[in-house]
Every structure is written in structure tokens, then in C-alpha cells.
Length: 512
Image 1: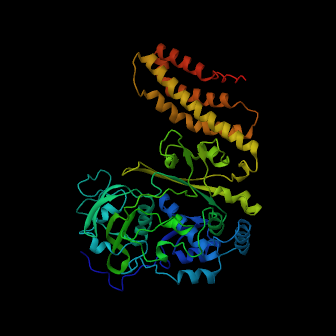
Image 2: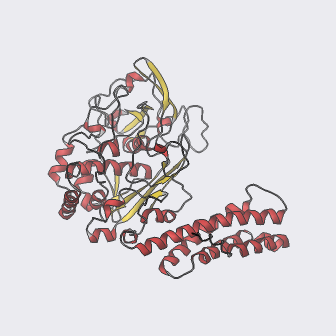
Image 3: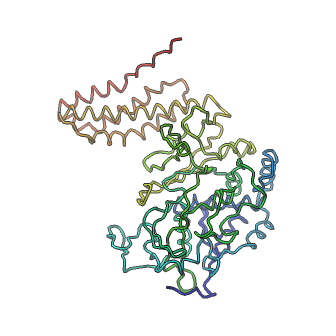
């Protein structure tokens, strides 16, 4: 069991550089304090791991609300919007408010009593550490084989502390469920943990022309029940809640954005604190996850579920799914008959100053995972300015986007079925997953995206015909060799292409 780190071992999340940022073509590293002091000169975050960037944006938005006063639940909607506009007009965060906030709390990652976003009690509550390889994503740990990594159970290379902080955020927000390092509390030892609050999700963050605009545009408005002033706290603002004293209620904005982690972590520093050599990674609470609305996630409704409280589920991240396929969800306001709910942060963007609103883009951060332990792929994207396409500003454009998104998805389903039927006909077999289907879909989606943007530019163009042409071209490409070699394949593909252009029958009209 490692002893307490010596006082000389320090690394301040506020003042040591660990956050990658970009200004024009120049890249740099800053701490949290300089992130806010220089936010008006920084174009964007440049963290290499999208899930870490998504987590950091939530933390930075909570701090933004603190240093600007936008976290006051007593403000009316008009007062809140006026205050945010005033903060934007200032052009930068008030340096005095920034220093006052960061001077108030402990930000040392290796502080013996209050390490930032960690639980020091794990030194005594865990019989052993988890190991640095279990902490770092992608490294094999335990008896797992090292297929794609030079690391193994006996090769535990330290991690730079700056990188370890990003990994710390990934575990807090996207961590796995299931077996973990055993932790003993009140004489009871448990080794099961819940998944992180954002696991397998895709986030949509407003992106301004500077980080100052990005953070102010990203502050969610208070829409909950009564909340007394001062009732809300981020983990570093209070005595870290242990499993014996779990926090109650999801308060706004600190607890909502920073206080829902299901994982308890403690980093073990190397000499001087520039590296992390080991880590404890275990469960944080045994309380059931509270149902919340994350302001940057999209949701869909499943009416057939018996548990009414869980009929709403978040959209899962899918690395194979292009961002434009979610545009209908983003631009359409929710109605009582809708099955999708756009991110709640979109409801606050219409009150931004006109010049900012017209230039505001959306940053997409996704982490394709299963619900338990498998991490597939993370991804990121930036949309063009799209707020002028929302239903509130251009209903016709929003409906056109929704029509095109539906058309693309329906044609994709049709292509999958027809490609499968063509394969089975040509080969006289009944293969469950014929190769033509997946290959055709892979070729189809880039062509569908080209058709999608053309259809938005040409409001009178025929939507089904455009996507049918994209699907037909994709199917011809993947079957070219087979059509040349076998007449049966040529006939089957010809019939499939003919059916792609056939319109589905219109639904029957309701009679009185």
C-alpha cells in the first residue's frame, strides 16, 4: 500500500499546463485558470481524446456559470439572458472573478487530503491498486493478451500526468460497468461498479468563434424545481462525498454537469509528480443512477416499455453513422407526438446575439461503446452553422431537412433488403448476412450525403428519386464483377435497381 505522496509532489489542474488548445494554426497547453483568462484568444479545445474534451467542456461550463453568476437559480429567464448577453459583450471573462474562483479551492491532483476529482480514502479501502494498465484505455491488463500494444502485466510504463488527467475524465464520464477493484466500506467488500453517466453517448456542444463564446453559449438555463441559492456544488467545491454519504438530488449546474460519476479513482504519482505510475479504479456509489436530462444529449422515446420513468433513453453513439443523419433531431423542436428530443441546450441558443447565433456551429463528440465494458471507437465532427435552419427560425427548411433524413434512412433500409434478395436469388442460397448488403450500404452513405446537401439547395428536387439513384449506384459498384461474370447476378441486380425506384404505396386515407 503506497504511503501518502510527499508534499513536494504537486500538479495543479488549475495552474499546470495539461489542456491542449488551438489558436489559429498554433497549439499550446494551459491549465484551467489560463483556459479562462485567455478564453477570448483561444479558438477551440484541441484534446486528442473526444470523450475527454466532452467531459472537460461540461466541467468548464459549470465553472463558467460560477464566475459569471449564471448559476443563480433566482434569476428570471429574461434576467438570465440579459446577464449572458452582458458577459458576451465584455468580450472576455473578468480576470478578478477568475482568480477569485480558482484561489478558493484545492486543485492539486496529488493533494494528500483533497486530490482533484479523486477519493483519498481508496488508499485504505482497497487492499491493492488497480494498476496503471487497467487505468489507461487500450492497454492490456491482468491476463488479457497484448494484441495491439507493447504493454503487458509486467510492463507498467508511467503516464504523463497531463495525459492521466484526460484519462481520469474519461473514466468519470464514460467508465465501464461490471467487475472492478474490490473496495471495503463499513466492513462490506464489493467489486461491482455502474457505468458512467455518458457511456456510449454522443454529445452536441455549441461552438463559438472563440472559447469564450463557446463556454457562454454552452451554459444550460435552470429549468428544474425550486433550488435554494448555494445548494449546488461541484465535487471540488465540497468535502468529497464517499459511499457512506451519497449526495442527494441532481442540482444545477454543478452536480448535473460534474457530479454524477459512478467511479472512484486515486492516482499514484511518480517522482516529482510529472507522471502517474499507478491508480486505484473502483466503484463510487451503490445508489441507483438518477434519471436526469443532460443538456447536450439527444433522447428518443420508447412507448412500449412498461417502466414509464425509463421510456426515454439517450441516443447511442455510432462511429459508422455520419453526423448529418441526426440533423432532423437537432433542428426540429419537440412536440408531444414526437419520438425524439433534441439537446436541451438548443432551447437557450435562440436568445444569443444575432451575429453569434448566425455563426454558431455544433461540435459533435461521440464514444462508440457497448453498455458494459467494450470500447469500440471515439469520434468528433463540426457542423456548419445550422441554428438558422431550426424550426423556430425557418420551419420550411427544418421540415425539408427532416424529409431528407427520413428519405435517406428509408432508402438505406430498402437497399439492405433488396441487396440481400438479389444475392440470394443470384446464388440460390438463403444467407442471413449476404456480403452485398453491407458493402452496398458502405458505398451508399457517402453518396447519400452528397444527395442530401444537393436536395437542401434544391427545394423542389425529388427526395426519393435522389436517394434511389445513390443506392442504385452503390449496388452497381459492389456487384460489378458478379454482373460481368454471371447472367443470374446481372438479372437479380437489375430487378433490385428497378425496385429501388418504385415508390412505396401511399397510406390509405382515413374515412369519417
